[in-house]
Image 1 (cartoon, helix red, strand yellow):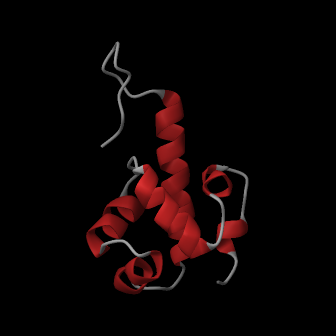
Image 2: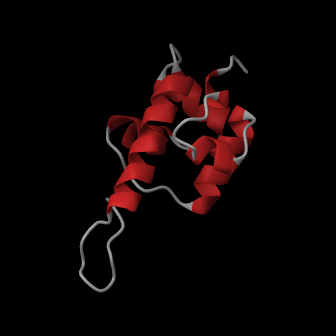
Length: 90
């Protein structure tokens, strides 16, 4: 589910871009790990990993913090479309 612009009820381009970046980076960081192993590494549920790696979806700040900590990057690095620190074998 995507966030919506409160005044129009539509998804903003920025929100969609952030959701796509999270989706792409999680897929890259998961590598060959199973969803269960990846969820354990990130400290989030298997269901959350499934949702976030299957289709772009908004993520809470709390979940973003857990993911960033587990991948040893800052939240801003994780959300930066050009940053590749999440790919390092950690």
